[in-house]
Length: 157
Image 1: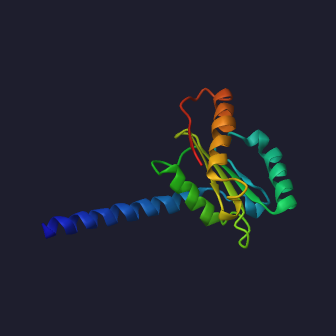
Image 2: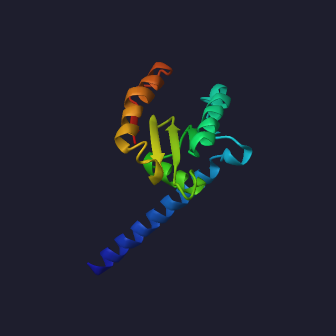
Image 3: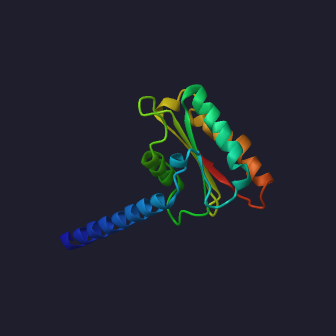
């Protein structure tokens, strides 16, 4: 019995390490728009025609109250979990001011038909999970359904 327990634990550690490596690799492949003064990363090209407009809106909000918002549209994250990916990307990019933790990430993953909103703790008063869920359900999903032939969108705050 001890052998099987050790074997199972070794297997779990191996899977966990492979998962962590894939997550780091995929996060590293997402182009961070901040060094060039932008807020939008769209390797998929889905919102390319609106990137300048979105950047301007986010820049105006950042100038107004310091909130940092990143918008990311990716064709795929493989078999990784969207929420886990959003949290890792949010933390890697350090979205939001360090002293206010006022960052917001909107992540759209095309092949999984998922939209995630990740907020810093400083945003919870303004955007609690229930409000993020409402935004996605009432605004985001209907928009994507209307502008795409995709169906069965899922969201999570």
